[in-house]
Length: 53
Image (cartoon, rainbow, N blue to C red; front, side, top):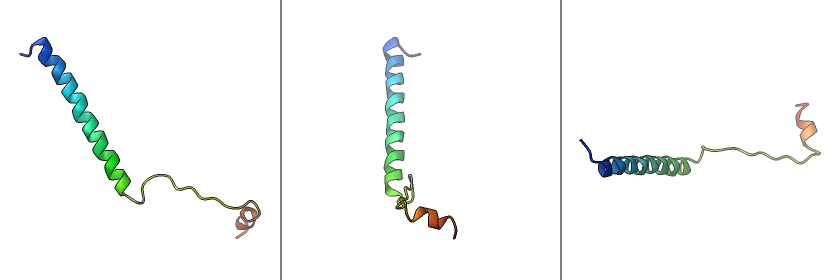
């Protein structure tokens, strides 16, 4: 059985473990060059021509 202080420390330790996992996941995403959003811009005069091709 845990004391009240031990129970509180378990809760805090769980938060640290979850934050570490989140940090690790974010770091792995930054290493993947094909992850994230892709933004493509076209000039307004060219965009209508592309719909006909």
